[in-house]
Amino acid sequence: MRYVRLSIVSLLMIFLLFTVACSGKKEDDFSGPSDEELENLNEQDFPIVKDKITLNFFAGQAPATNPNWNDVMIMNEYADQTNMEIKWKMVPHEVLEEQRNLAFGSGNLPDAFHSASIGASDLMKYGGQGLLIPLNDLIDQYAPNFKRIMEKYPEVEKLITMPDGNIYSFPLMSDPDFLSYRVGPKPFINKKWLDALGMDMPETTEEYYQFLKAVKEEGPSNGEVDEVPFGGPNVSSLYQYLLGSFGLANKGTSVGLIDENPSSGEYRFYPAADEYKELLTYLNKLYSEGLIEKNIFTIDHHQYLANSSEGRYGSVVWYSPTQIMGEKVGSQYVGMPALEGPHGDKTWVGLYDIVLNPGAFAITSENENPAATVRWVDYFYGDEGMEFFFMGKKGETYEEKEDGSLVYMDHIMNSKNGLSFEEELAKYLTFPGGGFPSMTSEKFFQGAESSDISLDAAEKLSNNLVEDGWVAMPHTKEENDELRGFGADIEKYVAEMREKFISGDQPLSKWEDYVKELEKMDVARYVEIKKQAIERQFED
Image (cartoon, rainbow, N blue to C red; front, side, top):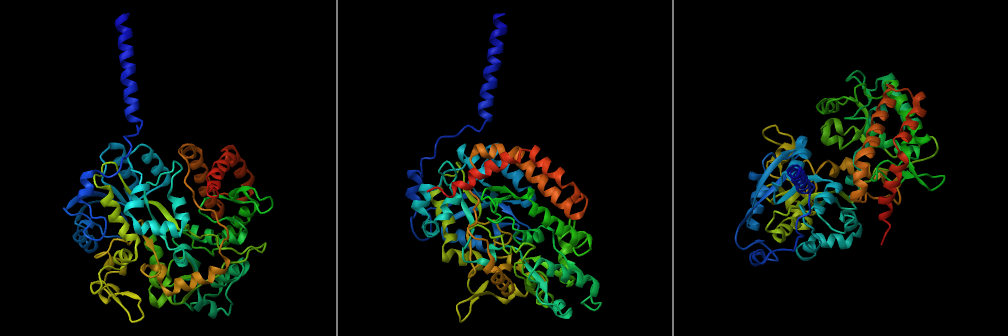
């Protein structure tokens, strides 16, 4: 029996050791740059380091970006300036989360994650385990550009500081004044058809319905195309446009499915509100009458682009028509205002936070040159670095006009090889596709949001923007652990049922069953957890 006891004890010890090893045990706390690194570091100007160093970066590869950053103009130039060679591992977006988790789980970490869209919950998790290093002191000492941004916009520091008090990443962010970027997809209407129908610009949800109905019934293209009253790559953009017309998401959309009950001032899970049912009823009416593209729930993005380019849509909620559809077709469209709903509500609620993604760039515990790495990324948060990142090299990719504005050169705007603007641009730059650590601004970011038609559309929405919106504060580890289970199920259920109610696959007569199911899923607890995070933004 003695030997049996010993073997059981031994097995238990082995099991406990294995459990500890696999539990994400926190590594030794990061103690700052080594003396060896500091001896090689130039604290100002280029090059960043005296003797050349090589780092390994994991990078998210969007479909629109250059597929190989190991040989692209901007990174080649920057390597020469900094004396820092980056070996890039490109990871396509469709496997980004899987490969990122494998990197963390295997212990085979890169020196940094770039454009890898690390969410707040993972920043907390892997920062807490010591796999990502805290950047608070490094930013203070070696990131003057980003430090200035945080001083100018204190909310940025709040949004990237995890509940444990640490900053584990540099964000993708937007200039607060770049409204066209912050409102995201915008509503556009075919002005040529509107005029042909003898109708005024819709100002209410009823007038919008009447316009869509007229497009279907009266054929304003005179047989040139098969008209589709409303079309898009999905129905979500139309749904988002109309939320504020029905008094929903009245504190913005950054915190998800929670807003303020206008009657009581209490927190509200608005997908269970009567106003939400009214919105779904309205959208179901549009769909059932053939006023929304029939296959909008399954349409291939390339098919949407083809339909757009043919000028088949009476209305869209998306990005710049002149860039998406081409100048000839796109110039027929103009921006629409926020629509007044059945109870007098008229708000544009989809205003992105200044911080669009907190985890655009994170440094791992494997990195032996953290100070140099912080200097490397900080460059892209200053005017000089943003101009370089978004525009490239003067005289090679862009020119400066007499009025001081910057424009891409003709060989990029009008490809000799028949390439699209983004395809030509990707030969030189890496920002197409998004997710990058930098700040988008109207001056330097020359994407769809900077086109004249987009700027005009954003201006039409500016008088009806959501006021005093809540921002997306990070959840604590405990909150994330709880939400990862039932919270994810609730959000998935709401999204699935929204599409079913709009399409008619689930009749709205089943609304009470839907609400009861949410109650069974403990939506009350979901609201309580979200409330805790929301209220942290008001703490000093």
